Image (tube, rainbow, N blue to C red; front, side, top):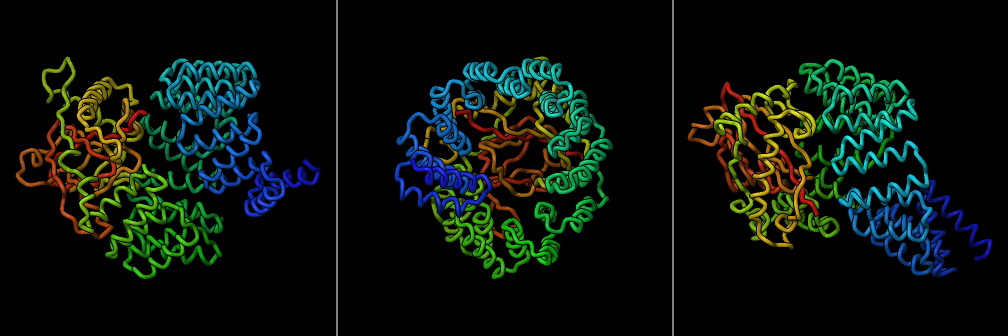
Length: 604
């Protein structure tokens, strides 16, 4: 390699580090023509393609670089990083293993191998890799975090806590370690200790937005809503440019303090940072959840005065135009978004919803098919594609939305020690009632006229909640065991060797309360378990308070009849595909309607 070639390679590497993608790629392509097969050039071309989001091309260049020079630990590691990012964990494991095989003293390689092995469930392998990292890096804070992560993934919370506490004895003023300990304690439902750990991190100068949010939620879980609000007020002062923190504060105030202006702090912050896109984005997202689309358009006019232009704002404009019946204007903005970034899924999905509302399900279906070609597991694309099929009269709609076979009601048994199922679910209601601390429904969720618990319900150490969790797991396992073997199907085909819960919460609806028709984009199997029902729902002859399937959200303006309606009964669990439209029909009663809901994801 000539000195000139080496200098050009260094120049291209520097450009990539600075985010100067186009000049870097131009220079690298020239180098690839003048010095074909050069491993460093191919490696940098791979990194450029990865930075652009073209993972197929990136993998090609990584592997070409390794063909040219097989003993490159760094290239194997970077390939593994990318494979991990695109959920190819097994391939990532192989690549990390190759990296540390080539370079046994590659500490970062052992560190990342430990994490990915932990992710795929190889606990022994993860611990062995973590010990290799410790041998190379010593007993550092990073080592303690690694062991804590590996133990936590295996459910060994005491061992994870011990690793962090040992490190804090050595480094008592390490704010990051206190923050990690707070997260571990919060996950273990030790909320008082979690708040103390987060406060220690804050006192040591940590100003991480996630820390503020988690501290506020720890206080909330301790039923100290006043402290939670104070923390979030402090947060937006400490990190005033964080749209995410402003969003969390506004959402929390909406639920905790009805009647207050939950947007006040955000509206005060925006004029001081008028070019801050994250603040504008948070503001428009919050307005969208309230259905205030005219206000979004007014806000966008103000933002554009500051010469702010970003895909996030253009998408907000397109959706607001669609929701305010400005069909042609919305279509024009959506088309411009797709021309600017043809591979981006969010504009395509929102455009698909707009097209179905405008009477063009064929084009909507094609957009969804394009997304699924690159991302077969995109739940929202399956929901919208199925809806388009229904509007087109395509028989594939029944293949995707088989309401009779896919909606599975099952009665949950009471555990030993209760005289009846009624006694068990009455006890569950009493325990869950105490967890409903807010005054209003979550701003960004689908329920109306009620409240929802915070965080992962099944992490709580409440004995009745844990009994309920155990009985739910048995019922879910029974239902899944009866699923057909159909590997090509986007629902049936996802069944794995087991399952995990990716979220769990309780909802308490009051009179005229309901869930808007919706789906769950992150789950596989979703649910409604009825804990308590008003007499009007239990004894009524109509469908008030029932759960319905197959009706799209009202905002789409699509007239489709329910594919199935299920009457709730106390102790009955209804399981269904997460991508299936579902919602609650309003009811009238002085008694609440309480459910526990959760999402299930398959284990590989």
